[in-house]
Image 1 (cartoon, rainbow, N blue to C red):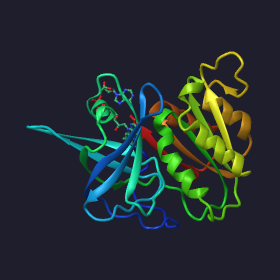
Image 2: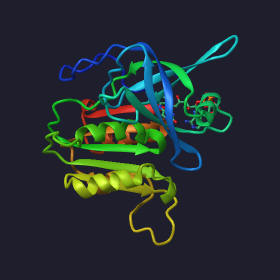
Image 3: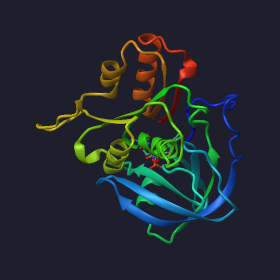
Length: 256
Ligand SMILES: Cc1cc2nc3c(=O)[nH]c(=O)nc-3n(C[C@H](O)[C@H](O)[C@H](O)COP(=O)(O)OP(=O)(O)OC[C@H]3O[C@@H](n4cnc5c(N)ncnc54)[C@H](O)[C@@H]3O)c2cc1C
């Protein structure tokens, strides 16, 4: 699976990314986030210390008798001292790797390489940030937000999370984000439902429309986008064409 986000050199203002290496990890915890989405927590047991930056991804390996499969999964947690990391994934109908991972029992081990990718928050944070995700595109943003909003992390900018899903029950990590918003006055959590039920008082439709509504005429912020190609491409077009963004203000990772 080829990562299709913006690749290349890390910008000058970015701390050096740890070099990708091969590791082995054990699944310690698996929980359902929805009927078709899982949160998996791994502990690295071989390969040394696994250093990464919030937002990067791992490339997991599944070895068959004759061939080997690899798939990319964004790290859905912030770096910690405990050698653990999480991923968040959808069970794709007919999908080889996602079904294998979703069916794994705690105690199972897997090889992976990492960390990969340059979808990380540019430092220092000098402008407000808008994180725009759909579905499991929330994974890297969960890690980024946990880092930015960690106790003791100084932050004087506003952070927005526009999160597009279909139904209220598919707002992944909803309680977590609501808790963060309740404790950080500068963090604004905006779930956007494309199939909102009656009585839903939040935003409806698509993240694209909500972006126009909340940010129209502003070009003094940076945007981080993650999800399927169609959404990411659409939002990039809006930001560049309608908002007048410079391409360096837009950072993205596409899952396709
Ligand atoms: C940089 C990067 C990070 C990624 N991070 C994540 C992540 O955090 N969480 C996550 O769930 N996925 C993520 N993905 C997607 C992931 O790598 C796999 O593509 C996905 O899990 C499907 O793999 P599979 O082996 O189950 O499906 P495959 O056996 O490869 O495909 C089976 C069928 O499903 C279709 N398909 C593949 N992916 C999807 C999809 N996402 N939705 C609908 N249909 C699909 C294929 O076109 C094919 O027809 C990421 C991809 C990239 C490039």
